[in-house]
Length: 224
Ligand code: DC
Image 1: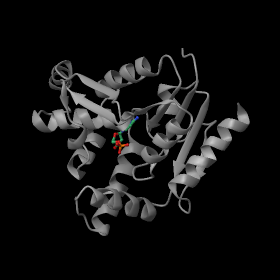
Image 2: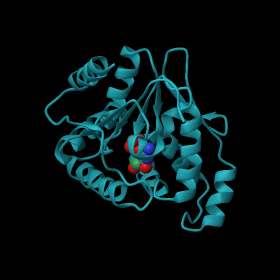
Image 3: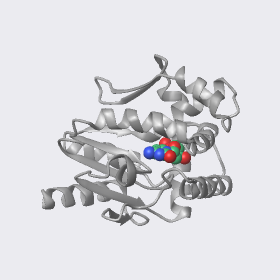
Image 4: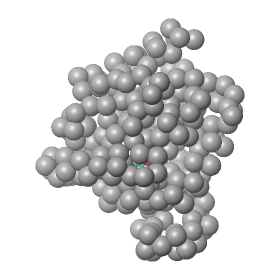
């Protein structure tokens, strides 16, 4: 299916996949794809056009009017567009996190986004980050990693990230939100979150982003 190097990085909410995937891509001069951002784009579309997402006819009609773009700009920052509007700064709120986890349970949504992800990954030389990259979207990827950390640590990391974007949420609520996301992402019928059988699992609880990045790069270089 694919040519060229594909590195998949999967794991639960708040584990720091984004930071690590971006650094790995930079160090190895590869492209980077944040697939969570695509689910977030669909979530924003649903927020703006309230529909019953359990109704496939309504959902399909909305998806047919949803064009998602994802490109690296000149500064190597990933820009996400929804029907040609730059929505990069509009998809990181707790509300969008919640809706994206809901829309990600829907088969029609996954079908559309997986097609797009495979198209983008077709030529390889890319680091792809999400929940089902190694298990479903790119089962033949060259290297597969699964990052994990305790719920408490992930809540702290996600809260810090939100606070850097001037979004305040107390730690108790953050922990509950992440616990709920975990339940939904791991328990859904369509491509639930779990490590691929041949993924390298890294417990990042006591590691910083640089240490995790180095672990991945070392693994890739040793096995190349
Ligand atoms: O990684 P993230 O927090 O930006 O992802 C947002 C939501 O999208 C998350 O609840 C799970 C879902 N998701 C998914 O189901 N499959 C992916 N490949 C990426 C994200």
